[in-house]
Amino acid sequence: MGRILIKGGIPLRGRVKISGAKNASLALLCAAILARNEIVLENVPDISDVRVMIEIINSLGASAAWENPETLRIVPPKKLNAGAPFHLVKKLRASNLLLGPMLARFGQATVALPGGCNIGVRPMDLHFKGLTGLGADLSLEHGCVCGSTPDRLVGARVYLDFPSVGATENIMMAACLAKGQTLIENAAKEPEIVDLANFLNAMGAKVRGAGTDVIKIDGVKYLEGGVRFPVIPDRIEAGTFMVVAAATGGDITLDNMIPAHVQPLSAKLREANADIIEGEDTLRVCVNGPLKSIDIKTMPYPGFPTDMQSQLMAMLSVIPGTSVLVENIFENRFMVADELKRMGARIKVEGRMAVIEGVDSLEGAQVKATDLRAGAALIVAGLIASGETEICNAAFIDRGYHNLEEKLKSLGAIINRK
Ligand code: EPZ
Image (cartoon, rainbow, N blue to C red; front, side):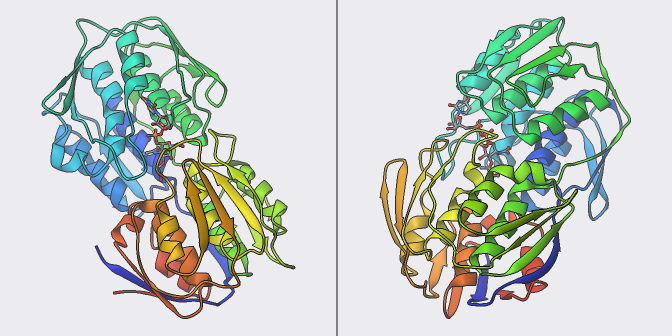
C-alpha cells in the first residue's frame, strides 16, 4: 500500500494546478456507455479510481484508453460483454453508477454489489427506488444486483428521500433513453450532477434543471455521442490545498479551479480568519493572523462538503479553543480522529459529533490512512506537525489525488514516498 514520509512545520507557498474532478470523471465514464459513437473526455485525473473504472467499462465491452496524460478516448460498447466483474467492482463503490446506463442502453445489468466501505454502509435503496420506478426489474442474486427491463424504460416521477448524489446520477442516466418524461424531485445539486447533465446533453440528451431540487429529463431514442468534453476541476482537491495553505500558515494560489464550487469551504476558512482572494479560475489562500476555532456541519451541496470534514479536523486540532464538527452525511466518518490523537490531538467523538480542543502543536508519528479523505487529513496533519510523520496505506490517497506529493513538494513541502 506504500508509505508517505513528511517533515512538518513549513508554511507552504506557491501555485498549484488543480486536476479534473474524480467524482465527475467516474460518473461521465459510466455515462459514456450510453452513446453510440466515440467520446473524448479531457481534464481527466490519472488516479487509481479512474483507472479501475476504465478497466470496468472495458470489461463490459467498451474500449477506453488514454490519448495523453489527461485525455481519455472512449469507444462505447455495441453490446454488453458480461456483468461488471466483482474483483474490480469491490474496489470501487461508484461502479453502482453503471446500473442506470446498462439498463437504459442494453435492457439488462449485472453489477456486483460493492458492499459497504469504511465511511458507511452505503445503501442503494434510493437507486433501486428510482430505477424500478422507471420500469426496471431489479433483484439481488449472489451478491450481485441483476436488472432487466421488459421493454424500454418509461419516464416517471421519482422523489428522493435524501438528495443522494449517486441515486440522482443513476436515475438521470437511465431516464435519458426512457420513453417520456422523468422528474427527479429532491435531487442532489452537487457540481458533479451539473457536469454530468451537461455531458449527457452534449451527447444528445434532454436534461433540464440540474443543480436545482428538480431535474426534468425528456427521454430520447439514442445518444449520438461523438463529443469532446472537459471534466470540471476537482473541488475537493482544491479544498484540500486550501486547508493546507491555511493550516501551514502559508500562501497558496490554486489554478484551473472554479471558486463557486468551493464557496462553502471559503466561507468557513474566512470565518477562521484566513484570507481568500478569488479570481475567475483561481483562488488564493493566505494567513495574516492567528486562526480561530470554528464549528462545521456537513450537508448536501451547497452545504459544507462531507469530503472536506476530515481535512478540517486536522487543521482545527491545533487552533486554540473548541471546534465542533457534525457529520450529517455518513455514519462513520470520524475514523481519522484516532490517528490524529496519536499525534497529540484532543478530539472527543460522540456519534455524529466530534469536539476538538485545540492543542499547541501536533507531533509527528506513524499513522495509517483508513480511507481516501482520512489519508488527505493525515497529510495535512503531517505538514503541520513537529518532526516526521509516516503515513501507511498511502494507496488510499492515490485513489483521489493525482501527483499529490509532487504538487506539495513544488510548494516547499518535505515529503517523500517509501
Ligand atoms: C458521492 O457518494 C461521492 N462519491 C462521495 O465522495 C461523497 O462523499 C458523496 O457523494 C456525498 O457528497 C462519488 O461521487 C463517486 P450519496 P455517494 O448517495 O453517491 C445515503 C469521496 O471521498 N444513501 O450522496 O455514494 C448514504 O448512506 C467520496 O470522493 C441512502 O440512504 O453518496 C449516505 O448517508 C466519498 N440510500 C448519503 O445518502 C441510497 O440509495 C449520501 O450518499 C444512497 C445513499
